[in-house]
Amino acid sequence: GDSVTQMEGPVTLSEEAFLTINCTYTATGYPSLFWYVQYPGEGLQLLLKATKADDKGSNKGFEATYRKETTSFHLEKGSVQVSDSAVYFCALSDLGSSYKLIFGSGTRLLVRP
Amino acid sequence: GAVVSQHPSWVICKSGTSVKIECRSLDFQATTMFWYRQFPKQSLMLMATSNEGSKATYEQGVEKDKFLINHASLTLSTLTVTSAHPEDSSFYICSARDVATSGRTDTQYFGPGTRLTVL
Image (cartoon, rainbow over all chains, first blue to last red; front, side, top):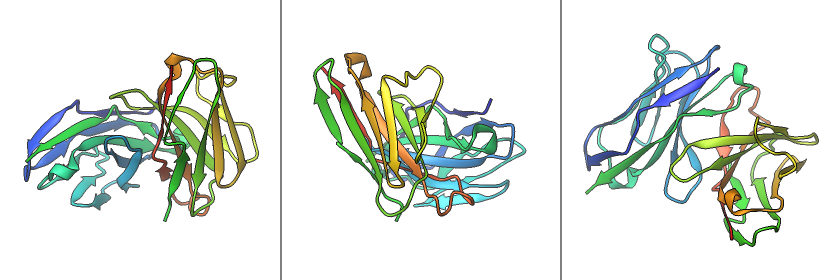
C-alpha cells in the first residue's frame, strides 16, 4: 500500500541555518504530495503541495519539489527562524487510497536563537 | 478562506461519560470530513471518513460503536466518544474537503484539534 517515510527528528538548528527534511514515498498511482506543519498545541496547517512530477510547491520561504524518479518530496528552507519551530508532516493522497491522506511520522524542528 | 473549526478545544470528563466533538467548515461546504487521532509525539491516525447524509466509513481497528460519527449537513460533522475511558484520552483532529474544488484537488483543511482527557 501507499506509504510515506520521513527522516526522524528532532532536528535542531541555529537561526538562519539551512533546513532539509527528507521525505520519500511509495504509491501505486500518481499521488499528490503535501507538507503540513503543526505548531505546539494546534492542528495541522497546509504548508505547500505539489500535484505532479517536477512541480515545486513553495510557501513562507519553504520549498519542495516533486521528484518522481527518486519518489521524493524533500522540504527545504534557506534560512530558518525561531518561529519555524514545529512538527512537519509529509503526506500523500491519491486515487489508490481513495484520496485519504497518508502521513509520515513527522519531524520535529527546533530552531535556537 | 477554507477555515475549519472544532469545539470544544479541550475537554475533561469522567470515565464512563460520553463526549461530543463538533467539526465545522466555516466558509465552504464539505461533503467529506475526516476524523484523526493523534497520540503525543506521533503522527495522525485516520479513524473514519464522514460523508454527508450517509454512514461513516471506519478504518480497520476503530470501533464504530465507540466512536459515533454524524455528518448531518454540509458544514458539520460530530464525533461522539461513548463511555469514555482513560485510554481514549488523545488529541482528536478533523479535516474537511471543499466540495467546490474536490473534483480538482484533494487538499484537506484541518481543524485546530480537540484535546480529550478522561479521568
